[in-house]
Image (cartoon, rainbow, N blue to C red; front, top):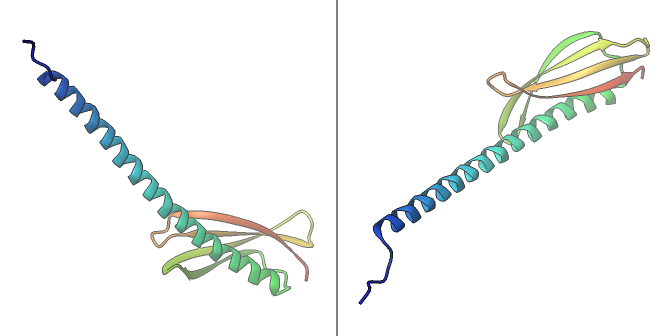
Length: 118
C-alpha cells in the first residue's frame, strides 16, 4: 500500500511561501498606516496655511515685502510657519507664500496666493 500525504520538503516550501506572504502583508499594512499619518499631518498643516492666508486677505491691506513667522495648533499638533511676501512685476500685487513646518522644522507644504491693494 502506498502512503498518501505531503513530504517534509513540500510542507517546508508551503510554510516558506506563507511566511513570505504574511511578511509582505505586514509591510503593506505598516506603509498604509504611515501614509494615513502623513496625510493627517499635511492636511492639518494646510489648514494652518489657509487660515494665515485668509486672515491676510480679510485684512484688506497690502502686506509689506519680507518674512514673518507664525505658529498654530491643529488636531493637537503644533506647527511653525513663515509668510514670505515678495513683490510682483505689477506693483498693485504681492505674492505671499505660507510655508508650514512640523515641530522638528521639516517643511510639510507651501501654499501661495496673490494679494492686491485693498
